[in-house]
Length: 241
Image (cartoon, rainbow, N blue to C red; front, side, top):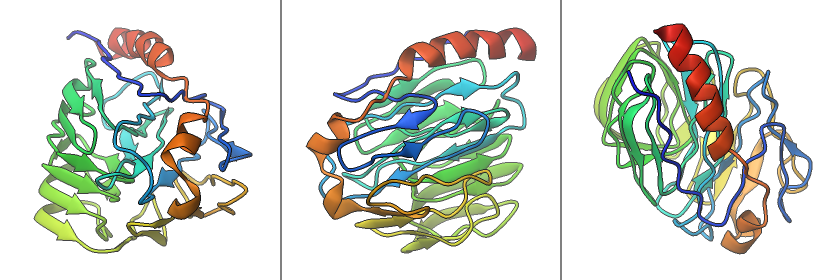
């Protein structure tokens, strides 16, 4: 079980405690709590990446709260205690629990998340509390299940413990880990991700207005995660082994 994080950070850095951009001020991503913000904007370039932090001892039966792009929309993630919040736009996540997961510019193609497979072309604001996730597109969806096999989740409502679907195309996502969150193509209303909130100057505890999250502003955000991913993935590899 190799533990690799091949993370491509396109002009972005993710701090595990704070995500500070020119439009996202005082947006906190606490490593003990999941303050996960989905940056669903029509002006975010698909070349930007907010990668994940793996703050956990095991990736087995973890929550993958994964917030990502809807085609050109970027969403930041963290893996907190046993929750993997995977936020990617053109990144590759390869770990012992995340095996050969490729996060493309508007596509997330990962094979295993939490000793599971996440094969998706797009994953946007999804919590994955599951052992297996097989999907081709996850756009603004939270997946709180033990096994989730879906081909496309495009801004969908996922209110279930187990979801097996091929396509979920909607504008709102309401799940057990992400409650009353609207994932529109221009706005993200993310109320709770692991009982925490991302508060910014343009997003007050739930909303990320995409008109104010430009690609240049998101590039100016501090997104430092690739080194933390490689370090914490080593810890996870030791415990799960």
